[in-house]
Amino acid sequence: MELGLPVSTNMPNEVLGADEALFAAGAGANGGGGEYLPMPRQTAGRANMKEVAMTIRKLDKTEARAFFDGLSKLVEGKQAEIEVASLALGDQVEAEWLPLLGITYDPKDDLIEVALDGVDHMIAKPREIYVDEGFAGLVSIEVVDAEGSREIIKLRDPLMLPAPAKRAGRA
Image (cartoon, rainbow, N blue to C red; front, side, top):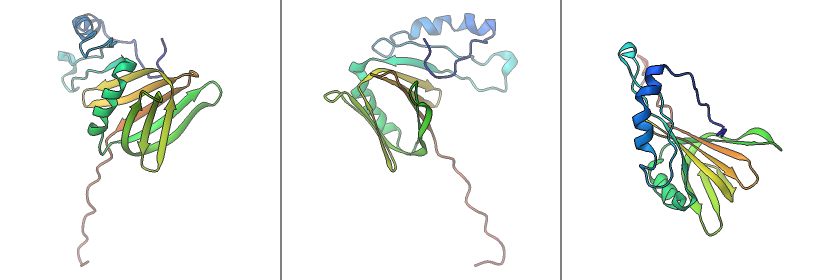
C-alpha cells in the first residue's frame, strides 16, 4: 500500500535479517493494530552514524482522540508543514513551517483540526491515519480523508540560531 511517505527497500542483508525480531516484537506493542517498518541500525562498519529506528504505524480511529490529546501537549514549540495530495488538486502545500499550536480529533463530528499560527486546517471524516515516529519523536502524520485525499502534516523543531555577535565600538 502506498503511504505517500518515502520508504527505501535498498537495505543491506544484515539489516533485513537483524530487524526481524524488532518487527515481530513491535506489532501491537503500543496497543491496537500497529504496523512497524524497521530502518537500518548502526553496524561496526558504520561507526560514525547514529542509531536510527523509525516506525510507521496505522492509528486506529478509536485511539485518535487520546493520541491527539496527548500529542498536543508534546508538540509545543514545533513547526508544521501541511501538504495536501489529491487527484483533483495535485500536490499543494497548505501551510509552510508555521508554529504548531495543537492537533485535535472530535469523534462526534469526525473531524481532525490542525491549529497553526494563523491557519486552522480541518480534515473531515478521516478514513485512515498513519503516524511516522523517529528516534527524536513524531516526524509526520498522514491522514486519508473520505474522498481519498492524503493530507501530510510534517513536524520539525524550529531552527535555533545563535545570537548575533556584538561588534566592537558599538554601545
